[in-house]
Amino acid sequence: TALKRADAAVTAADEALHAAERLDFALTLREGIAAGDDCPVCGRKIAKLPPGEASPDLDRAGEARHAAQAAQQQARQPD
Image 1 (cartoon, rainbow, N blue to C red):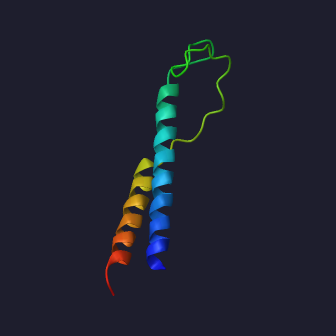
Image 2 (image 1 turned 30 degrees about the horizontal axis):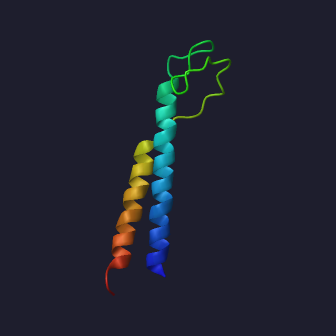
């Protein structure tokens, strides 16, 4: 049904937004650290930094979530 598809779209949009937020936070933690520094999460010495990732588009992820929620509300309206 339309409501089930809308619910699934909201769930997917929520997951995408949370993933973007986690990546953004990880990239923020990574700023200013280098090999030999202590890891800000676990405290171990960093032997080598992994390759960097592109910064997530949090605005786009938030807009997609908002659009999915609006479609979900529309699907809940009686015909």
